[in-house]
Image 1: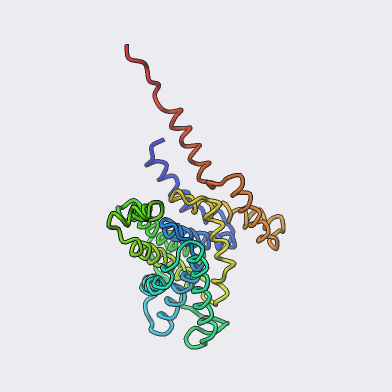
Image 2 (image 1 turned 90 degrees about the vertical axis):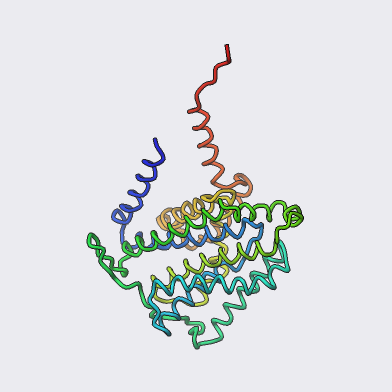
Amino acid sequence: MPKFLIWTAALAALIALPHGLSFSQQEILVFLTINVLLVASYRLLTLTGEWSLGHVVIMGVGAYSSALLTKKLGVYVPVSMLLGGVIAALIAVLLSFPLFRMKGFYFLIGSFAAGEIIRLLWKRFRDPFGGAKGIKGIDPMPDFSAGFYQFDFFEPASYYYFAGAVVAVCLWILWRIEKSPVGLTFHAVHWQDKLAQASGVNVRAYRTLAFAIASGFAGISGALLAHYVGTINPNAFDIDLMVYVLTWAIVGGTATFYGPILGCVVLTVINEIVLRELGLEQMRPLIYGAIMILSILFLPNGLESIVQKFTQRRAAGGAPERRPAE
């Protein structure tokens, strides 16, 4: 089947999807869409070989920034979402000065410590962050009519279409960055950092650039979340959510662009449909941990390796048979 028809069918299915779901399932779909952007942005950071434990806190920076811009300064919500991403990227640049003096395990621990400091600041200062209770009554997206459809953003289906459009644009930008010379340099910094440095590449600058870009898109995902749920607090961006992001990335695989997204979708379906139906929601951390361990032991390259084997087999089966020259 031509790729154009496949993409058209996939787009039609995504547009029709919320109309076959209940209200609560539509809400899960909104959160899944936002989480797809979060985990895709996290993968961009891993291209340089660094894994952070503060990525969800950076997501929170975008959420808090966008919420405060609308509540305190009356900034139009879509503009505040973009500014939330910009502020998250700027915070990442500031954090990069101490963090990128470290590598590997030390960077991992340092990013966790930096994230906890930011979360403690949110808890400590009631003005303007609202303290431990956070910020309530965040302005929602203003409703509007597109002629053929009335967007009421209190309805999850409408917000799903809005978030889906924003996430699709962000994913396209992330994909284009990865395929650009800048993205190839990120790979070089990861796998051949000494050789890249010897070739004149400023390794630290490229690590900072990847950190800032990934944080900017994580900030936009946080802003999308804040203006949908209407309330945020420091506990919404704690280490529990970070463990889920790590699990999505590891189970899905990080060698391809779609790997972490696949992990996020599959584990969310397992979590929200299978575990909820079986009444095992309280055991979710235990089951997530077991899935991560089993994935590392028996599927070290993640779910994306299954897709790659399937597509390679189809390509081999569809290739024309070569005949020896007569």
